[in-house]
Image: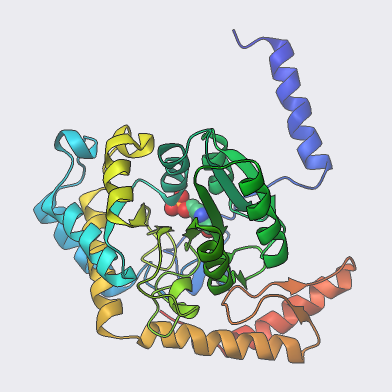
Length: 358
Ligand SMILES: *Cc1c(COP(=O)(O)O)cnc(C)c1O
């Protein structure tokens, strides 16, 4: 029963969140996702906070592909993959992602949160070790919590500490070791030193997993992601990613890598086995996304140009920008409120000159 005690308890918790200044509010949009959006109160604003890196969330090619798929493949699958939820489209998308990333095989999930949630417990047991970057995404943290491997944490992108943790895992007698990291850390736009991580992994005989949600589609010379940016095309073990950011922004995720890993995930990974197939509309539209990205690097190049321009222009207005080479452009404000006003007016001035992708 929903007792008054329990209600009071929830109310107190909510008030505490509010008092701590941690309450999250939602801005209501009255338009589709875009570089310029309309808010429910009628204001038209420049939008610099979506993960819509390539402007594909409302691109005419993508919405047309989705509309066509709706007519020919239907709306839903009403099944998990292994019962009757795999259309030829789903397999085609998995093969396309493998080709795009340069991996052996790929498995789709309802989201990347699920891909990370269903990864570690399938691959590792209590005899093994997982060595995790301290700033990894919540879904990696939860995925690691679900597995019984011994846990080691290293300071964010700190290779000296990573090596120390690898040595500790060896000293503790780990059978297999898996290093896990975000490809790009979304809070500060820092790109992981994936090349250095791979060198350490080779020296200490560890597997490497990286989550490339904030890179696939635009980072690296042809937009393949952090592994391309770091010169590791064709050399990766295991990556997870999302269809919900640069790649159209709808939803869906995947794990991609060595064939036996993917084969085992298909047999054992719980969010894959027990959650619905991705809707055909999203799968077909995603195929069109990859077709566009393989045909031309224009969008990826444009976001790189915009990134260079925006980072430089904001720096020239006197703000400290963290990260490097990545469209996530965190402006460090400090405490003073007048800094916020100054940043907003600089944002508007600089943002207006962006060649927006839409
Ligand atoms: C966004 C994000 C996710 C979650 O992706 P979904 O497909 O939305 O579940 C996971 N990992 C990282 C690093 C992300 O940025």
